[in-house]
Each structure stands twice: as C-alpha cells, then as structure tokens.
Image 1 (cartoon, one colour):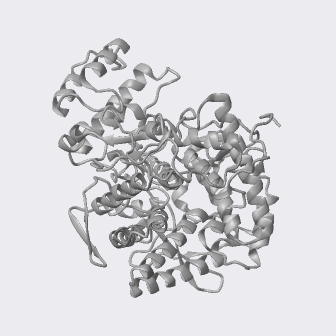
Image 2 (tube, rainbow, N blue to C red):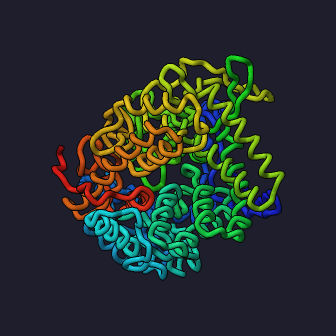
Image 3 (cartoon, helix red, strand yellow):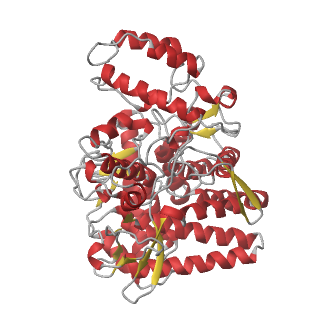
Length: 605
C-alpha cells in the first residue's frame, strides 16, 4: 500500500496509514507497460528505519546461510527475528568489519556465532511470557457437552497450554523500533508456537474461538483490540505482527473475530469501534490489485477478489529460499515470481499445488492469476458480518450497502465459480491479458479456466453463508465432498495431490476441518450433520492420539492415519499449536463427546 501519511475517512473513522515501504501492483504485464522490459520496479522498496533494519537482517540471513546453511535446523526466519543489543549503526559497522574468506566472502562459523552472541539478544527475548489474568485451571461450565472422562482430561490439558503460548511485547520495542522487527502491541496475545513467535492474522480466529471455549473473554477481546489498532495504523491487517509482514495480509477473518466476541458479550462499544475499521479492511480487499472484473457468458460483469501481495522481492523471512527458487530467471520474471510467492503466503496456503502451473515446481507459481473460492467465501462472510453489526448498531445505510454486496457476490459465485458437473466451487485461473491504457480491464469468462482439481477449499462456501437452508445444491455439495476422496481416517486432506508441499495431500489442517464441519452442520441437512459428526470424531481422535504419542499438539496432521503428524513444506512441523488447540476446544465445546465412545484405539486403524 504505497501511501505516505494518507488519511482515509470512512463512516466517521479516520485511519492513519503508515508508509510501510512497499509498492502496490497487479500483473507483470502492468509492470512491463509502466517500467519496460528491464524492470526497475523493485528498487528502493525499503525507505525508512525499519526498512534499513530489514535490509541488514536479510544480509545477515544470507551470510548465515553460507555459514550454517548445511545444518538441518537452519531457519532463515530466525535472523530477521533477532533483536539488536546495540544501535543499528554500531551493529552494521561491526558486521561489515567481520573477517571474510577472500573469494566467497563467507564468514567463519565460530566468528559469526560470536558476533551473534555479542550484538543480538536471543530470538524472542523482546517478547515477555505472560500468564493471562482470566486463565483458570478448571473454568466453571467448561466443555459442558463432554461426558467422557478421557476427553475432559484432555480438554483441560489443551486448555492448560494457553499460558505457555501467551506473550506480551516488551516496552523497548516501541521505544527502539530500529532494533526490532516486532510490531508494538498493547495487549497480550496467543502465538502459534515455536518458530512462529509473533501473533498471526487468520490463525487468531481459531485461537479466539478456543479462548471463548476456555472462558477467556478478556484475552480474546485484547487480541481483537490489538488487531483493530493495527488496521487503524496500516489500513489493513498484515500477515503477522512483524515489519517484514507489512507487504501482505492473510485470509480476512477480522469480522469473524469481532462477531464471535460480540455474540459472546453483546459489547456494543466493541461493535461501534470495529465497524468503521472493518469497512476499511473490506475496502483493502475489494479495490486495487486485489479486485478483478470478469464478464460471464451472458455479458454480465462480476467483481471478485484475489490474493495480491504488495511486494515483488524475496520474502524477508525466507529470502535465501526465494532466491534459490527464482534462480536463473530474468529480473522481470524474478519480480513476478517473488510477487506470486508472497501472494501465496498472503493466501495462508504457502505452499500448494493450487497455485502452481507445474505441480512439481514452486517456480511455476501463478498465485496472483487465480480467483480463489475460499477468499471470496471469506469476503462474503465479511460482508454478512458487517451487515449484521451495522444492523445491531442501527446503521441502516451500511447494512443495506453490504446486503447488496452479499447479493452481488452470490451472483458472482453462481456465474464464475460454481461447477454444476462437479457440484462444488472451483478456483478460476485468469488468462494473461495485456491491458489497454485508459480502458478498464475485463476478463472474459471461460469454463476451461476453472481448476478441476479437488481441494478442501472448494467446499468452504458451505461455511460462509452462500447457500440458504433448503437450497437444492446442499445435498449435491455434501455428496461431492463425501465422495471426493478427501475424507480419510485422520480427517479431511487438503488436496488429493502429493507434492511435498504442506498445503497438499496428505496433510490435514485444523482450520479446514472446523470450517467444513461447521459448514456441514449449518447447512441444516441431516446427511450433512451425519458427515460432520464422523469428521469431528476422526479429527479429535487423531489429535488426541498424537498428543498421547508425542506429548504435543501440532500444526498439521497426516489425514491417512489417526494419530499421525503431518510434514512437508519449508520447515519442520511445529508444536504448540494455537489454532489446533482452538479448534479442539471449539469442537469439544460445541459438539461434546459421548461418555461411552472411546477416544483411544490403534492409531494405525
């Protein structure tokens, strides 16, 4: 969002947008049109103190890659998370004075280790472990529908993990921003775990649902207050609470968080504060490079959204990895690939065959050329939430405006994303189309551009209010999901394609399980409820058995087996784990566990 001290006024709210040092753009053809074949687009993307810090930490990351890159535990993210002990100037000067090999320029391992010890604090030391004031060992009326003793004991163990994942930002982060990449947040928050030391956007929806199940409304409300402050500062909610995440967002769930708290508390002050900021976030997702116009077969135009990071350089937290992926490409192609890699990170699905032309090659990512089913379902849900909150606040004009937006997006789903033959919604791949100056870009719908592969995301619209109870499509969609091959002994697989990427087969992720389970139940179909109950039992059993075997909750599981953890992707499977814990507590709270139904059995069965 290339803005300098710009003020955005929306429904009475003044939003101060900071200069985040990033530039907004659309397709690569737009860049060629404006900048020529030689590019030059990505120069000078860092222009403030935080930018200088990131540039330095990325240099440090590259040097560490040369020195430690052969180590199995090497994680490039660690180096952009390090807090500085001295000033940035002093640290950079010391770094530049390190002795280096004459040809390669590498730094000796021991020399670099000493430098890191002398000039940096431990990773995460600018965050304070914090015990939430509203965390009770055994909350009253906890998991009232759970009748099984083992399930209740396990639920309490998962509940007991919240303090170990709660953090508070040190005051020095705000006082000395050129020594930290953390964003200064006022209230305590829940982190996912391990390498994910900061709070993340879409993870936090399921964390908040879990906190509500744990009767921790104050902690949940504090997290939302943090997020609203960030939207007020940036005009959108970044991927996570680090300066290097300012170039992108994540799946938009802020309205869901606000509505969850509002439903639990009837807090009109929260709704009043949140509504204008939700309008600002909605605007972020339906304008600029995020929005696309597609003309259907009847000549009607529809506006749908796509992920589109405001970035065309290597991701700072993984710059060494991204440079390897883009090696050998021209500068212009590298910029487009870097943009699509960052855009895949904005999707939350980093990485997946969903975004790749060649499912074996990360370098074939075309994320910004895809209209995702789930993103538009989330925006539909956001529009429903905004209309609901506006109505609760007697803001008739906003309620009517967003009711119209809901109707328009439903028409777009029907015309562009629904596939009658498969009885599900399919991602739509945009063709490359050179723009004409002064002419609005409109893509012509082509049925051959739909991605015919089956992904769990194809069924997310069930959760987002797209179909009303009694709609004839519901049973068709339920049957399509039931027969898709995605539903396995350990839950719902992310896809049917085994690529080695973490958002593909055989991995199963907590948020996808929850959305599809809840979506099936909300549909009102008896057949859907039966399927939802079966998936719920499989997922909870898998989480429980893995916890019994390994002593941890983890970020992803192997859908092929009950009790097996997942793998693949850019890093080893992480423990903790924020959204997994939140989904377990939510499912146990909402649907319970019968007294006579065992949780434990042969994990390979």
